[in-house]
Image (tube, rainbow, N blue to C red; front, side, top):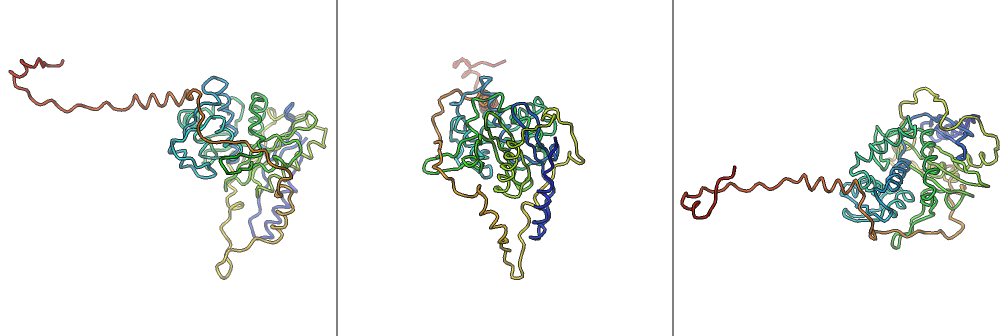
Length: 382
């Protein structure tokens, strides 16, 4: 069955108008049962969207496939390049040349959504950003993600990097079904990096009953994206929402979708894989920048307008904005300890670059007198 969430988005739009902002369009969503892929509800599931850090799910999937193929191991070194070190936040901030294990890199990327680490994973597993993007697109095609295209491993904005809620559903199913041994990465409550305690950006982790993943993402053109997975009584549901107004609101929306799914035993006949495409203008990615990141509103005195009290009150009331009700289980991460084999593609890249270094050309030989040639044994080289 198709459940329409449009009233919720219309209400948000009306609220935005009251604050003087441009109302947001209805944003894509998808709710389905992981066990059989049958859909509970969907809205604009084929609308092209900028994935932001949801991209890192594909980065993880390609990496899991590479580990499975023997190209690297969890203790293999992931080297931070100068390019990776220059990526925009969020980031761990390691200087170029730092080495971390693939295991720690995956934890940092999936829990804290670090863009520098994601780029490093891509460069090491693929040999280069472009080669890794090629692998991402090859996997997307193999999985039937017809509305997706990738150009980088971290989700920083690129006009040619996009996906759909339906395609993300296919990706989630592939990760969950093919790599159950790696699912612990998606439910880590927080990281301990030296003395720094870094909580998961997924506000459902540690707060929502049965939650076991999965990923968040934000850039201004995409808004606040989120995929949440939860398991209760042997039933795992996946909720996807794209383009929400804030980190708290996306958590609330996903939680409400999951609540509705667990309370609803009736599932429609459509599956994520077989859902017929629908919608007009879906092949053009919506840009949410003007809605999510509008230019600051100026008062007569030139000061920035203050947030409306109703907005502040709404945020404070959310259970996902409250402190955790238990001590977080933190997983320690750091650099070093990478004793495994160098990722195959990275080793090949290093070997090629070494081979491509030009051999220094010797300086021309000075003329030698004939008698000197004879005495020294130097002759012509043919």
